[in-house]
Image: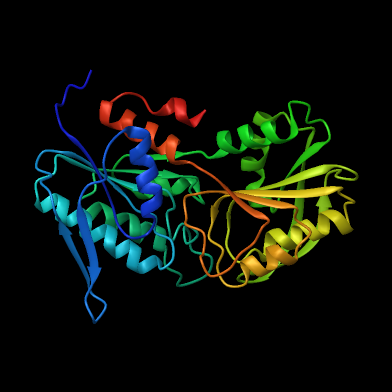
Length: 320
C-alpha cells in the first residue's frame, strides 16, 4: 500500500528516450511531457509542460555521449523539478558517466566522479538509481541514497537460454585483474565450468598489451565479461589472446554498457569474437553497423526498481 499518496511521474532528456519509453510501457504509465532544446549558442533550454507539484518524479537520463550535454540536461531538469515543488526527485542513470575517474591515478588528478556526485546532489536529486557502476565505491561519493543494480542476472538468463543448462565446457573470462570479482560472481551464477583471467599491461590510455592467460581455456567456449566496452581495444585484444595463446574454441563477449567510441565497432567487426552482447543502457551508435553486436533490454528491471522505490518497499531482491 502506498502511504505517501504522491503521484508518480516519469520524464526523460534526450540521451535515450527509447529506453525511457520502454520503462514506461512496463509500468503502464505515459512519459511526462517536457521539452529539452538547445539555443544557437549551445545553452540548454528545459520546459516542464505539466505539473509535478508533490509528485514522485523519476528522471531517466544516461550520461553517455555527448556526456557533458546529457549531464547538463539532467542537472537543469532536476533543478526545474525542484523549483516546481516536486515531492521527491530520483535521478535514474542507467549509465553513470565519469565513473572511471574515481581516484587519483597520479599527482594533481581530479576525482571527477566525486565532483559529478556533488553536482547531482546540489542540483536537487533526492536519490540515484543506476546500474553496474565502474567502481562500487562511487556509491559512497553521494550523500543521498544510491541503488546500484546489477546486470548479471540478465546475462545469466541469456546464456542459459543460448547454451542450455550444461555449461561444463564454458569458461568465464575476466579481461583484466580489476574485473575478477565481477567475473567470478557471473561464473558462479551461470554455473560455468571455470574462470580465467587475461593478464595485461596497459601502456597508455585506451590501449593495452596482453601478456598471459591465467587459467585453462583450451578447447573451451569462453565468455569475456566486463562492465563496459569503450574503444574495444582491450576486449578484442583479450579475445585474440584467448584464441592464439590459450587455444579457446569460441569467444563470446558481454558487458553492461556499450560505450563504443572511436574505432570500437570496426575493431569488433574485425575481431575473433563471435558475438558481443550489451544491455540497452546506452543507445547504439547509428552511424555504423555490426552484426556481431546485440542488445538485451534492461527496461523491465529498471521499471521494477522504480516501482519498488515508489511503493517504498525493498529494492534488494533485484540485486540477487
